[in-house]
Each structure stands twice: as structure tokens, then as C-alpha cells.
Length: 492
Image (tube, rainbow, N blue to C red; front, top):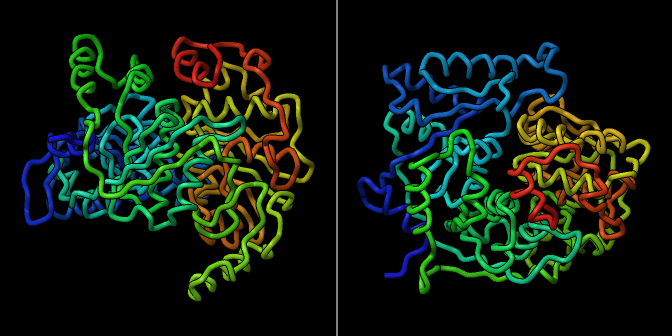
């Protein structure tokens, strides 16, 4: 019987079945400072320990300050949450990448780059965007606090098996369009509920041509379409990305792991409950206009009229979104003045994203009056970018070069938009108040965000030439960077 990659991993990890629920073994449990405290308290109250501390990893990311780390943490809640995670990690013998760790960063960036994420494993984390790890061929789920306590205590989780949805991306991207534009368009087409109850498997020529980091972007944002998780079958690009990572298998273990990983292909004839196809060659840069990621248009388009929506309740939602965002029906989105640009988050803060931004802003300047921030997804990304000399490009262009953290995406720290401030963000959610009370968020790709920073208004990045990789004057390039970052961008 033909099986999908999801079915193969699911069956390999099923321990028991109860009605329509399956008990899955968990290979990797990732946790962070915001969603874990209650789960740890539950363990204490019941006198339980963490069953597999060696398979459990804690990170500080959601509310860590991204400013100077030699200064005290000013926010009391942030201090307490980080202090609590450190205490819990010590008590339960869990590895923690804390505020001062050289491997600190956003959990969904750190997992893949350290090799904690590998093909064929099950991963859970108390964060909805855990689907990101599916880009490497892992089966990854966001879980709630009670489920987290269960995983801590048993290294298992009860779960219903989702239906399967095939999302085929065919064709080749035009210049200045990217994986972020593709997934925004998919959500625009299907709506925020279009994938509910399904695991999305991304397939097709465009996905095969994507780098591993681009695949992380589409898997990350599948959650915004309602997906339970997302996955891409692993290939040589994934193996290259992981080889030599600190926690990845090595030596004979690597050889054996590769043999298993290479079986994780979706068989011809595998059955999907739902299918969607996108020709990415038709895409222009996308940007959101409203208060959910499906409220999206091409950068050359106009804000929709409420009357375009046939359902009266949907019209009211659109009217509310336009009022909140301070936009008018029929208004061209391009040229809308902005206050802030944020390039970061678990969606678009990896090294390849930063290289693309550097190619656009090289030799140019951020518009006067615009605050433009670049927040690397991890401290390892930050160090690699600095060794390459990318930070000089950003600073000379007028960007703030920050330390790693979730930052403005979640606004649990000092990085936030003020009431009524408008920002172009590379993150994954544009809900009301998401980036701060009264904040107005437009989601876009790193290139669209960078172009908007230069103009002080929403801008079409296609108007800007991209510097060649040789023009960036890169000061250092490791074999890993050449192979996994520069080569997919057309260099190396």
C-alpha cells in the first residue's frame, strides 16, 4: 500500500490506539520560558520526574530582550520567566540554552541548525509554529500545557491522526519573490481555515528547488492556514544542512541514519484527502492588508472593497479590519506610509533571509523617520552573519542590528509597535494588538520589508536591483554556508 512520509513516521511511532486517538512516542521535546512553568508545576504536584531529560531541551526566546545583554533585564515578567525556566531545567536535569548561551535563539531556528531536528523523528513543543521542523522531514506538533506535562512524564503524547493535504508548488520563482510570498498566497486563496484538520505536505518542483530554510518558512506558516502540522519529504539538501551539526548523528550513526531517512519518501499513489496547486511563476510579492494572514494582496494591488465579499458576516469582518488598520477600500497598498520595519521571527530570521536583505540594501539607506530592526533568529545566525560582514551592510544602511529573540513578532519584550504605529514585519501573524496594543501589522517577505524600510512606505522590491554575492564583499564563508546558503541563492 502506497504511503506518505507522514504515514510512515506516524506508524513507526505508534505505541497504542484508543478510539480515534494514537499514543505516539516522542523523540524530541522542546520547551521555552512562556508555556512550560505550569507543566513543571504539575510534575512537582504529582511527584513526577522528566522521563527522558536527555531528549528534552529548553530555550529562552519569546520574551528575551534583544538589546545589549550586558545590561540588566528591565521587564520584571521577562526576568521571572527566564529565572523560572533556568530553575526548572536545573531541578529536572534538562539542557537549557539560556539568555547568555552561544546557542540561544528562537526554538524553531535553533532546533534545525543544531541538529536537534532530523528527518523521521517526532517533535513536540508548546508553540503552534512547531510545524516549522517538518521542513526537514520530521513530524512536528505544537502542544498544550497539559500535553506538555504528559510528555515530560511519559515521553509520549495522545493525538488524533490528521487528514492529509497535498500542497503542490510548481514552476520557478521570479526575481524578488520567495517562499514567503508563496505561502501568503496559499493562505490568501484557501483562507485561515482552509487546512483545518489536515497535515499539509508541500510537494512539487518549486519545493524541491527551495533551500531547506525556505521550506521552513512555508511549513512555519501552514499553521496560519489552519493546518495541524506540515512536512516536506527529506532529500540531499536536508542531509547537507544537518551534516556536522552538534546534535546530528555522526560517524557510523550518520550512515545508518541516512539509510533510514532515504526511506522517508511519499510513495507514488499515496492518498491525500485534499489537494491544492500553485504555480509560483505567477506570483508577485505579497503583503497583508488586514488582521489575519489571509487578508493579503499583491504589492501592486488595491485594498479590497467589503462588498466584494458576498457573506454579510465576512463583510463586517473586513470592515472592522479596515477600520483597525486605518485603510480605505480601493486604496493602493503600495505607498502606504509606515513607521517600523521588523526583519526577524521564526518565519524569516535565518541566515539566507539576511543574505537576501543585504543584497537589496547594500549601498542604500533607510528612510528618515523609519525605525528598521534586524533580529537574527539565533545567536549562531548572528555570529555567522557578523563573520561574513553582513552586519556592516545593515548598520551602514541604518538598520538596528539586534540580538536573537522572538522580538516584535510576539511583543513580550520592549520590541513592539506603539498604538496606531504601522509596521511591515516578516513574522507570521498580523492579528489585532499582536505586535503591541493598537499595532498595525503588514506581513511580507524580507525583500518587501527591506524595500519598504528604504522608502518609508510599503514598497515593491522589484524596483530595486539585488547586489551580487561578490558585491557584498563577504569576509568569511564556511563550506557549510557556501553549500547550504549561498549555492541555493545562485552563488558558491
